[in-house]
Length: 287
Image (cartoon, rainbow, N blue to C red; front, side, top):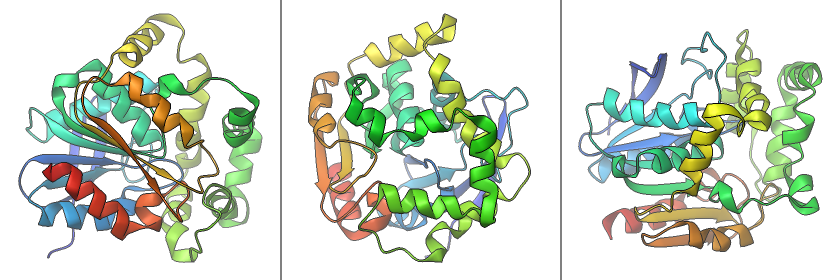
Protein backbone atom coordinates (compact mmCIF):
# COMPACT_ATOMS: atom_id res chain seq x y z
CA UNK A 1 0.00 0.00 0.00
CA UNK A 2 1.20 3.51 -0.79
CA UNK A 3 2.32 5.63 2.17
CA UNK A 4 0.07 8.45 3.35
CA UNK A 5 0.00 11.70 1.40
CA UNK A 6 0.47 15.10 3.01
CA UNK A 7 -2.61 17.24 2.35
CA UNK A 8 -3.23 20.82 3.51
CA UNK A 9 -6.76 22.00 4.32
CA UNK A 10 -8.21 25.15 5.88
CA UNK A 11 -10.46 24.53 8.87
CA UNK A 12 -11.65 26.79 11.69
CA UNK A 13 -9.23 29.55 10.70
CA UNK A 14 -6.11 27.36 10.67
CA UNK A 15 -4.21 25.71 7.82
CA UNK A 16 -3.90 22.06 8.84
CA UNK A 17 -1.33 19.63 7.47
CA UNK A 18 -2.85 16.15 7.35
CA UNK A 19 -1.54 12.68 6.60
CA UNK A 20 -4.16 11.01 4.39
CA UNK A 21 -4.38 7.37 3.34
CA UNK A 22 -7.13 5.31 1.70
CA UNK A 23 -10.62 6.00 0.38
CA UNK A 24 -14.02 5.54 1.96
CA UNK A 25 -15.81 6.84 5.04
CA UNK A 26 -13.78 9.39 6.95
CA UNK A 27 -11.80 8.39 10.06
CA UNK A 28 -9.96 11.18 11.87
CA UNK A 29 -6.98 10.28 14.06
CA UNK A 30 -6.03 13.04 16.51
CA UNK A 31 -2.67 12.95 18.26
CA UNK A 32 -1.83 14.20 21.74
CA UNK A 33 1.14 15.56 23.66
CA UNK A 34 3.98 15.08 23.15
CA UNK A 35 3.39 13.40 19.80
CA UNK A 36 2.83 14.16 16.13
CA UNK A 37 0.48 13.00 13.41
CA UNK A 38 3.15 10.49 12.33
CA UNK A 39 2.45 8.52 15.50
CA UNK A 40 -0.75 7.37 13.79
CA UNK A 41 1.01 6.10 10.63
CA UNK A 42 0.50 2.36 11.35
CA UNK A 43 -3.15 3.04 12.24
CA UNK A 44 -3.70 4.98 8.99
CA UNK A 45 -2.52 1.97 7.00
CA UNK A 46 -4.78 -0.40 8.97
CA UNK A 47 -7.81 1.87 8.53
CA UNK A 48 -7.11 2.42 4.83
CA UNK A 49 -6.90 -1.33 4.30
CA UNK A 50 -10.25 -1.67 6.12
CA UNK A 51 -11.91 0.72 3.67
CA UNK A 52 -11.63 4.10 5.38
CA UNK A 53 -10.23 7.42 4.31
CA UNK A 54 -7.89 7.79 7.27
CA UNK A 55 -6.71 11.29 8.14
CA UNK A 56 -4.24 12.32 10.85
CA UNK A 57 -3.94 16.10 11.14
CA UNK A 58 -1.13 17.82 12.96
CA UNK A 59 -3.18 19.60 15.62
CA UNK A 60 -3.26 23.40 15.62
CA UNK A 61 0.16 24.78 16.43
CA UNK A 62 1.98 21.50 15.81
CA UNK A 63 4.31 21.37 12.81
CA UNK A 64 3.62 21.45 9.94
CA UNK A 65 0.12 22.85 10.66
CA UNK A 66 -0.10 26.59 11.23
CA UNK A 67 0.34 28.26 14.59
CA UNK A 68 -2.92 30.15 15.20
CA UNK A 69 -2.30 33.88 15.14
CA UNK A 70 -4.64 34.43 18.10
CA UNK A 71 -2.99 31.74 20.25
CA UNK A 72 -6.35 30.06 20.84
CA UNK A 73 -6.06 26.55 22.29
CA UNK A 74 -9.31 26.51 24.27
CA UNK A 75 -10.86 22.99 24.46
CA UNK A 76 -13.96 24.25 22.64
CA UNK A 77 -11.75 25.46 19.80
CA UNK A 78 -10.12 22.04 19.64
CA UNK A 79 -13.55 20.43 19.37
CA UNK A 80 -14.57 22.90 16.68
CA UNK A 81 -11.39 22.01 14.79
CA UNK A 82 -12.57 18.40 14.62
CA UNK A 83 -15.96 19.39 13.21
CA UNK A 84 -14.35 21.80 10.74
CA UNK A 85 -11.94 19.09 9.57
CA UNK A 86 -14.90 16.79 8.90
CA UNK A 87 -16.33 19.58 6.72
CA UNK A 88 -12.98 20.20 5.03
CA UNK A 89 -12.83 16.60 3.86
CA UNK A 90 -16.37 16.80 2.48
CA UNK A 91 -17.99 14.46 5.00
CA UNK A 92 -21.18 14.72 7.02
CA UNK A 93 -19.95 12.40 9.76
CA UNK A 94 -16.74 10.66 10.75
CA UNK A 95 -15.24 8.07 13.01
CA UNK A 96 -13.20 10.15 15.46
CA UNK A 97 -10.18 8.61 17.19
CA UNK A 98 -8.27 10.73 19.69
CA UNK A 99 -5.31 10.26 22.00
CA UNK A 100 -4.51 12.52 24.97
CA UNK A 101 -5.35 16.12 23.88
CA UNK A 102 -6.80 14.56 20.74
CA UNK A 103 -9.16 12.63 23.03
CA UNK A 104 -10.17 15.89 24.71
CA UNK A 105 -10.89 17.40 21.29
CA UNK A 106 -12.87 14.30 20.32
CA UNK A 107 -14.99 14.36 23.50
CA UNK A 108 -15.77 18.06 23.06
CA UNK A 109 -16.63 17.67 19.37
CA UNK A 110 -18.93 14.76 20.21
CA UNK A 111 -20.64 16.86 22.87
CA UNK A 112 -21.10 19.90 20.63
CA UNK A 113 -22.41 17.99 17.61
CA UNK A 114 -23.04 14.31 18.42
CA UNK A 115 -24.73 13.79 15.06
CA UNK A 116 -21.38 14.44 13.33
CA UNK A 117 -19.49 11.65 15.15
CA UNK A 118 -20.32 8.23 13.75
CA UNK A 119 -18.23 6.37 16.33
CA UNK A 120 -15.91 7.62 19.03
CA UNK A 121 -12.60 6.05 20.04
CA UNK A 122 -10.50 7.60 22.78
CA UNK A 123 -7.05 6.61 23.98
CA UNK A 124 -5.53 7.31 27.42
CA UNK A 125 -8.09 9.96 28.47
CA UNK A 126 -11.55 9.07 29.85
CA UNK A 127 -14.52 11.38 29.53
CA UNK A 128 -13.33 14.64 31.16
CA UNK A 129 -16.39 14.86 33.42
CA UNK A 130 -15.14 11.93 35.52
CA UNK A 131 -11.78 13.51 36.31
CA UNK A 132 -12.42 14.80 39.83
CA UNK A 133 -9.77 16.70 41.81
CA UNK A 134 -7.78 14.45 44.13
CA UNK A 135 -4.23 14.13 45.43
CA UNK A 136 -3.71 11.04 43.27
CA UNK A 137 -4.86 12.81 40.10
CA UNK A 138 -2.80 15.89 40.99
CA UNK A 139 0.30 13.71 41.26
CA UNK A 140 -0.31 11.71 38.10
CA UNK A 141 -1.22 14.82 36.09
CA UNK A 142 1.24 17.15 37.81
CA UNK A 143 2.47 18.40 34.42
CA UNK A 144 -0.78 20.40 34.19
CA UNK A 145 0.52 22.33 37.20
CA UNK A 146 4.25 22.48 36.48
CA UNK A 147 3.68 23.60 32.88
CA UNK A 148 2.00 26.76 34.20
CA UNK A 149 5.49 28.12 34.99
CA UNK A 150 5.71 29.09 31.36
CA UNK A 151 9.30 30.15 30.97
CA UNK A 152 10.55 27.16 32.92
CA UNK A 153 8.39 24.75 30.92
CA UNK A 154 9.65 26.13 27.60
CA UNK A 155 13.27 25.95 28.72
CA UNK A 156 12.76 22.40 30.00
CA UNK A 157 11.37 21.17 26.69
CA UNK A 158 14.03 23.03 24.70
CA UNK A 159 17.05 21.90 26.73
CA UNK A 160 19.37 19.17 25.46
CA UNK A 161 17.55 18.85 22.13
CA UNK A 162 14.24 17.96 23.74
CA UNK A 163 15.53 15.29 26.10
CA UNK A 164 12.60 16.02 28.43
CA UNK A 165 10.25 14.54 25.80
CA UNK A 166 11.92 11.16 26.40
CA UNK A 167 11.60 11.68 30.16
CA UNK A 168 7.84 12.26 29.75
CA UNK A 169 7.49 9.05 27.72
CA UNK A 170 9.39 7.08 30.38
CA UNK A 171 7.21 8.48 33.18
CA UNK A 172 3.90 7.95 31.39
CA UNK A 173 4.83 4.62 29.79
CA UNK A 174 7.28 3.03 32.26
CA UNK A 175 7.22 -0.42 30.65
CA UNK A 176 7.76 0.77 27.06
CA UNK A 177 11.33 0.15 25.92
CA UNK A 178 11.25 2.69 23.10
CA UNK A 179 14.25 3.85 21.11
CA UNK A 180 15.25 7.33 19.95
CA UNK A 181 13.24 6.96 16.75
CA UNK A 182 9.98 6.87 18.74
CA UNK A 183 10.35 10.44 19.92
CA UNK A 184 12.50 11.87 17.11
CA UNK A 185 9.52 13.41 15.22
CA UNK A 186 8.43 15.29 18.35
CA UNK A 187 11.91 16.58 19.12
CA UNK A 188 12.34 17.63 15.48
CA UNK A 189 8.98 19.42 15.44
CA UNK A 190 9.81 21.26 18.66
CA UNK A 191 13.00 22.69 17.12
CA UNK A 192 10.91 25.07 15.00
CA UNK A 193 10.42 28.50 16.56
CA UNK A 194 7.15 28.83 18.44
CA UNK A 195 6.26 25.14 18.38
CA UNK A 196 7.03 24.40 22.03
CA UNK A 197 4.98 27.41 23.08
CA UNK A 198 2.12 26.21 20.86
CA UNK A 199 2.13 22.71 22.38
CA UNK A 200 2.22 24.16 25.88
CA UNK A 201 -0.56 26.57 24.91
CA UNK A 202 -3.04 23.70 25.35
CA UNK A 203 -2.03 23.50 29.02
CA UNK A 204 -1.90 27.27 29.47
CA UNK A 205 -5.45 27.65 28.16
CA UNK A 206 -6.88 24.93 30.38
CA UNK A 207 -7.05 26.57 33.86
CA UNK A 208 -9.44 29.30 32.65
CA UNK A 209 -11.26 27.14 30.11
CA UNK A 210 -14.49 27.00 32.17
CA UNK A 211 -14.82 30.77 32.47
CA UNK A 212 -16.84 33.11 30.23
CA UNK A 213 -19.05 32.22 27.25
CA UNK A 214 -16.59 29.65 25.93
CA UNK A 215 -16.53 28.05 29.34
CA UNK A 216 -20.31 27.72 29.28
CA UNK A 217 -20.07 26.06 25.85
CA UNK A 218 -17.47 23.66 27.20
CA UNK A 219 -19.56 22.76 30.25
CA UNK A 220 -22.62 22.18 28.05
CA UNK A 221 -20.62 19.95 25.69
CA UNK A 222 -19.25 17.87 28.54
CA UNK A 223 -22.67 17.58 30.21
CA UNK A 224 -24.06 15.99 27.05
CA UNK A 225 -24.43 12.25 27.44
CA UNK A 226 -23.03 10.83 24.24
CA UNK A 227 -25.20 8.58 22.05
CA UNK A 228 -22.62 7.24 19.59
CA UNK A 229 -20.96 3.83 20.05
CA UNK A 230 -17.74 4.48 21.95
CA UNK A 231 -14.60 2.51 22.73
CA UNK A 232 -11.95 3.79 25.14
CA UNK A 233 -8.43 2.39 25.55
CA UNK A 234 -6.35 2.58 28.71
CA UNK A 235 -2.85 1.24 29.23
CA UNK A 236 -2.58 -0.87 32.38
CA UNK A 237 0.73 0.83 33.22
CA UNK A 238 -0.30 4.40 32.37
CA UNK A 239 1.60 6.78 34.62
CA UNK A 240 -0.74 9.71 33.92
CA UNK A 241 -4.25 8.35 34.52
CA UNK A 242 -6.18 5.93 36.73
CA UNK A 243 -7.83 3.06 34.82
CA UNK A 244 -10.81 3.14 37.21
CA UNK A 245 -11.86 6.45 35.66
CA UNK A 246 -12.68 4.64 32.42
CA UNK A 247 -15.32 2.53 34.14
CA UNK A 248 -16.70 5.59 35.89
CA UNK A 249 -17.08 7.22 32.47
CA UNK A 250 -19.77 4.71 31.49
CA UNK A 251 -22.40 7.03 33.00
CA UNK A 252 -21.53 9.72 30.43
CA UNK A 253 -22.84 7.65 27.52
CA UNK A 254 -26.30 6.62 26.37
CA UNK A 255 -24.89 4.70 23.42
CA UNK A 256 -22.93 1.48 23.67
CA UNK A 257 -19.75 2.09 25.67
CA UNK A 258 -16.84 -0.23 26.31
CA UNK A 259 -13.28 0.24 27.42
CA UNK A 260 -10.20 -1.88 26.88
CA UNK A 261 -7.39 -2.29 29.38
CA UNK A 262 -4.22 -2.83 27.35
CA UNK A 263 -1.80 -4.94 29.35
CA UNK A 264 1.86 -4.06 29.11
CA UNK A 265 1.14 -0.56 27.83
CA UNK A 266 1.29 2.89 29.33
CA UNK A 267 0.01 6.23 28.02
CA UNK A 268 0.57 5.40 24.33
CA UNK A 269 -1.14 1.99 23.90
CA UNK A 270 -1.75 2.52 20.18
CA UNK A 271 2.02 2.79 19.72
CA UNK A 272 3.21 0.40 22.43
CA UNK A 273 0.91 -2.52 21.61
CA UNK A 274 -0.20 -1.83 18.02
CA UNK A 275 -1.33 -5.38 17.22
CA UNK A 276 -3.67 -5.59 20.23
CA UNK A 277 -4.86 -2.02 19.68
CA UNK A 278 -5.63 -2.47 16.00
CA UNK A 279 -7.36 -5.82 16.45
CA UNK A 280 -9.72 -4.35 19.04
CA UNK A 281 -10.22 -1.18 17.04
CA UNK A 282 -11.20 -3.05 13.87
CA UNK A 283 -13.53 -5.36 15.78
CA UNK A 284 -15.27 -2.29 17.20
CA UNK A 285 -15.55 -0.56 13.83
CA UNK A 286 -16.98 -3.71 12.22
CA UNK A 287 -19.46 -4.44 15.02
